[in-house]
Length: 283
Image (cartoon, rainbow, N blue to C red; front, side, top):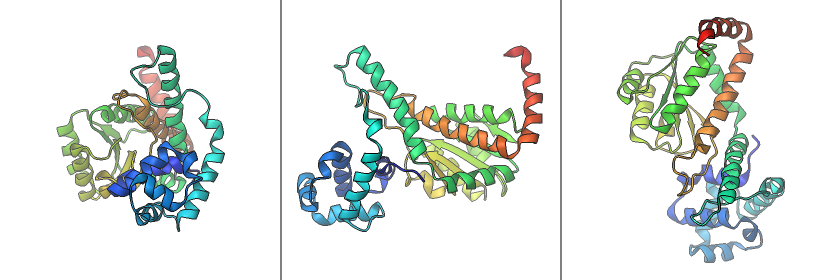
């Protein structure tokens, strides 16, 4: 896995205690400054105890504070080129030129973060599950439903065993009637939406394999998930409804689609030829 450490902190955010979140927030906002701080300096600045900083390091699977600083330093050194451009959260005082640049940088960043979070062992497991599935059902609620529909439409061109419903009630029924050998692919940025968690629970209880494409490693959704693929996107207060989260999820869909096509090239090529011909006069 090629992983930016700050991105890893963001994707682990839901795992932190309140004190650890204060440490994480300061690190994310002041990474350069943290490199020159002792554990006591960081703890005092965040108004927590030294033990909270140490617990933060342990939560990030690091042996201690020195390993944390070394990991952060190496990560930042490798990402200096990515810091160019107009970055930062959109504000009410931004000019349209600055706003456009920030949206551009945010979109690029969401894809880069998704790439840095790729766990190829999880991707491989996902592809094996999809390849052997009797049925593949895509699920999503709200904005994520649109992503699920796009994923279904993309895969349906090369694989007839894919399904997706726009209505939550039908998604719940579909999840409840899945069987062993079926695969549920669930899209959710937060992993906390009540309906999507219930869909995952029903699919898991039905003995289906559950794949989640989500922002956070630990969430209510991932409690019922067999395979987790993390997407990268940080949505600010003025960016509710931003497409960056959708773009990061669709980036992962593209990877899965292309790899699935590669693995089953001859079969998928024949199906694609048929589906392309069927809609040729409607494009």
